[in-house]
Image 1 (tube, one colour):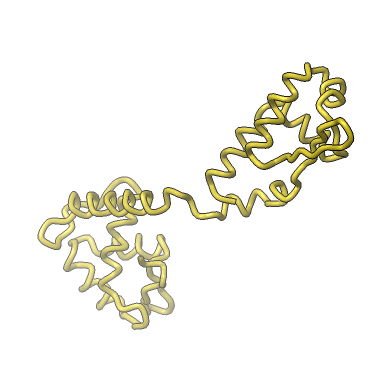
Image 2 (cartoon, rainbow, N blue to C red):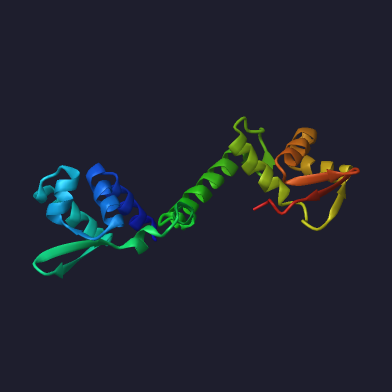
Length: 186
């Protein structure tokens, strides 16, 4: 189910009468007049809601003698909420472009000629800065504390704070005085 289909389904089911119609049709196929009687609605109101549900593909109609019977298309409801949430957004590309533009803006604001002007106060901005600095470390290589300090000092004089923050953010690990860049760096 696409994101737009999910939105249409949720909008359609957000109406109490439509939800009651769907619940009734989940039990058995039925016709407009019986639905109207069960739900305390007029037949024209039930027909209106059935039309909306049919446009969505949630119900189908068929003829039985002189009645038009309605049945639930249960396959549209067989999708789990987690499947919908894991579906890639239709705006995923646009979101990625916005995120990249934001990253570029932050890097331009805090770096000048390859040097960090100041450590950002906002955690999100600091994370972007730390990720940029972490790219200077090879992912499969072990570093001594002195080597880490020298590399970070090329960006900013307070290498202790940046080193500590890189470890806290999970961009680097430290074990027995040996530092290593993690795969978390994008």
